[in-house]
Structure formats: structure tokens, C-alpha cells
Image (tube, rainbow, N blue to C red):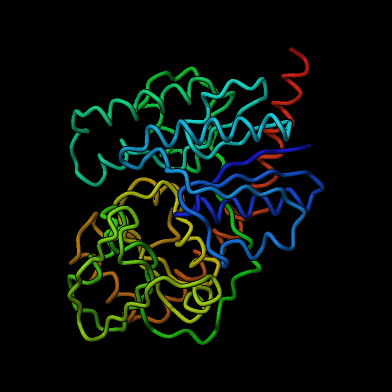
Length: 365
């Protein structure tokens, strides 16, 4: 089977795509990968050198970027050329727009996030009226309508897609994201500290909650402070026991996860969240914002703080940092749930089944 997969190099979709691509290649399938958003770094593509993979990196804008209309249309034409040349058996699009392509090949569109649900979560308001929002809503809806199946990484995200873009008659399915558990090493000698990973400039991540209160243990924050669209770096005030590590490669992130006893998942908008999963696979106790997606994914394996409340977050940090037994219990709960539900082989198997089903149905039609 030959699968063409699109990805972007800006967020967690790149990590997700790498897990999926590697899993498919290891099972004997052919893969063509096309990326958008910005040209990848050498660190992002080092794994590709060891794989028999056709890869097409581009810097075309993503559909959620402002003023992306012309660039996304150009990228669609470029993608059509690759599809025509590669002749894959299945199309796996991780952007909504490309669902509109008429190629005569079965199409999966995966909704990792979307602007409307992001806006509602971050601003607590309906989207404002503008020509760009109207364009975005129209092309996302059309891309979803023309997909053979729509996938999301959580039920919450799938419900948001259905609510924000209309029809409930589409074929829709949840496939949870997964990570390779053997990449992460829980340590028996963890430091009593709090770690959080994410873009500090992104309002949805609201890592600033950790900076708004003093904490009794060190706080480590890894992530960019510069917005990639505006180029503006965030100015932050922080207490003496907060360390900003900036962007880290995966080797250093894995070391931070392994050393840290507590992970704080602060986002007010998170359809899935690979960072909490990586922390859980590293044996960190999870503190999570009280949002529906986290409850769906983590159940009683996380300690929740009152939604978007810095005082409640500080109380949760104090509880776990002051109580080693409770901290260890939450770390074990998160680790066991992650190993049971959110592994890469399970994710790859579910997509593999989807591909085969779509191909067989198209062949029988």
C-alpha cells in the first residue's frame, strides 16, 4: 500500500506524522510525505535520512495563517502534481483544505485543531465577522464534506468539528495520537520540580499561569517565546525559581521529562496534547487544566486545577510537591494510562485499518 501524507513543521503534527510514517514504513508500506508551513530544520529531518521515503518539504503557508488564501491555493496545485506523479493508493491530509482535491483517490482528513474552536476557547466569544474568517470557514467545511472520512485525535475535537462546520452525516472517527513509549525513560531519581512545554506566545497554551504565582519548587518551562508569524518575542516577568529553557530538541526534552517529577498541562485549548503524553510516558505526575479534552484523555490519571485559575494551579503544585506518595501515585497512573491507550503501534494499526477499508470500498464501488 502506498500512502501520501501531508504534515506541517510548526507544531505537534510533525511529531505525529513522523510516528505514523515510521510505523507504516516498518510494516512494509510505501509513503510519500509532503510538508508545509516552513522549511524543516536539520533536527526535524534527521530521521528521514534513515528511511526509504519520498519527502517534499515546502514553505507554503498553512490554512490557519492570516492572508493564506493565495499561498494555500498554490500549495494545492503543487500537491496535485505530486499526487499525479506518485499515484498513491490513499491520501492522508492533515490539513482541511486539501480535502477539496478531486483526485479519484480515497481521502482521509484529520482535524488536529481548527481556528473556530481555538477562538472560542481562547476568547470565550464567537468568531468575529471578517472576510478571512468567512473564507476559512468555507474552505474547511468544503474540505471536510469532500473527505471519505474525517478523523480527530479526541472525541472533544470531533464534536467541535461537527458543531462548527455543520453536517453530522459525514463518516467520522476518533483515532488517538500515539508515541513510541521506548523513547521515554521514567527515572527513579526525579527532581521535585514542575515542567511545562509549549509556545509561551500562544494564548491557548497559557503557560503564563505558572508565572503568575510563586511556587515552592523550581519551575522549568521549555518553548519558544517568539511568534513565527509576527516575529515578536514575548516579554515575561518571572520569579527567581522559574527557568526558561527556550526551544529544545527532542533529546533534551526527553531528559527534562525524565528528571522532572511534575508536569503542568496548562492549555485552555488542547484537542489532544503530545507534551502531556510524553510527560506521562516519562513517569511525571500530571497536573491538568480542567477542560473536557483532558478529562476525556486522562480520566483519574491527572490532578485537575480549576479552569484557567492560577491560584488553583498553585494549590495543585503545592499538593504534589509536598506529598511524595501522592505524587508517585499520580505519576504511576499517568504512565499506565499512556502505555495502555496512547502508543504509536496502536495508532498506526488504526490508521492502517482505515486505509485498507477505504481502498477496498473504492475498489468494490
